[in-house]
Length: 114
Length: 111
Image (cartoon, rainbow over all chains, first blue to last red; front, side, top):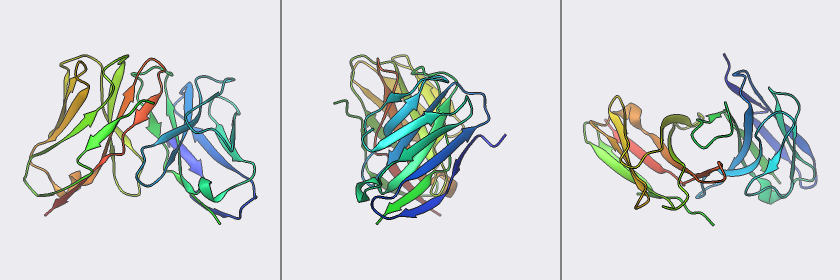
């Protein structure tokens, strides 16, 4: 099992460009999440999908959109990238959206917006 | 705004030392407290999920305790080894079921 995979690993964008970060999991998990990690701050939830067909905003959703393409895949889109979106992005999944469910993380995407 | 705080921010110990660090979280609407281990250039890996006041969990040389009434959890590492070097994250889960992460404690174990 690959677990949670993310592509790309690294990306450099210019301000105003758009891109989509891809995430896939092969653990048959129902719930998937997107986080961002910034220096001096904890992982912050951008969007999550409790189950296939549903998506909800997290703590920092502005400037992002998501698509739960199917049970395996959850993508994060930046429509018009801004320097403030320079960050490391982590996708995670869990069996269910419950508070006791362990989240399994992907390797991260390091994004720089110039 | 829910706040999860971890202390110390970083810790340098010698191989063989035992160490501990703290996670503080809101004591109201508590559902669960998660501990993760995050090695450099890798992704966070789950250590423990704790739900009951007084809970104690153990995995090898690492153990954790939970006090939900006062809102803190301790993580202990007995006889630290260089391979224990990592950032240790805690995350609080309340009524919303979302995880609120602390900023982590960076542990460096010198051989």
